[in-house]
Each structure stands twice: as C-alpha cells, then as structure tokens.
Amino acid sequence: MFEFFRILGLTILGIIALLVGGFFICWLMLWIWPIVVIALPIAGLIYLVELIRFIKPKKKNKK
Image 1 (cartoon, rainbow, N blue to C red):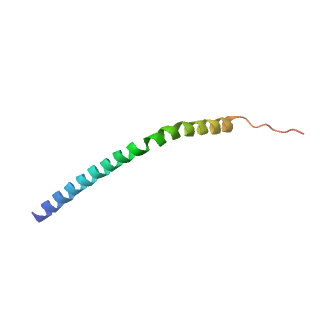
Image 2 (tube, one colour):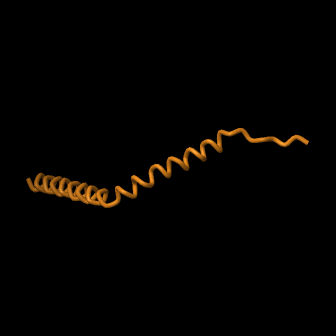
Image 3 (tube, helix red, strand yellow):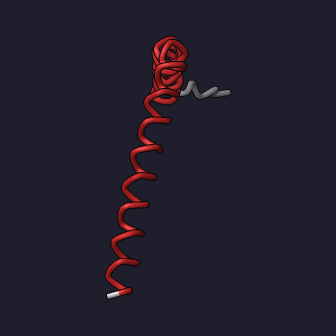
C-alpha cells in the first residue's frame, strides 16, 4: 500500500511540475514574442542569400 501512495505522490508532483513549467514557458513567450517576430524574417533573408550564393555556379578562370 505504501508503494502505491509513493507512486501516486510522484505522479501528482510530476503533473504539478509540468503545469508550472508550462505556465513559465507561456509567460516567457509573452515577453519575448516581439523579438521572435523581428528575428524570423531576418533569419529567413540571410538563409535565402546563403542558399542563392551556394547554388550559383562558380566562374572558372581559363588561361
């Protein structure tokens, strides 16, 4: 019986920890969402420039 209560208590503590962690993550995202909205288009632009530079054929010098 003691083992059952131990497992039940650990399960309840785990659920509480997940809820507190989820609450903290939501609160954190509310604070940093403007940075994410600004950073994503800039990162996409940099990715496209690098992709175009990689795909573009390189000029070979023939002497």
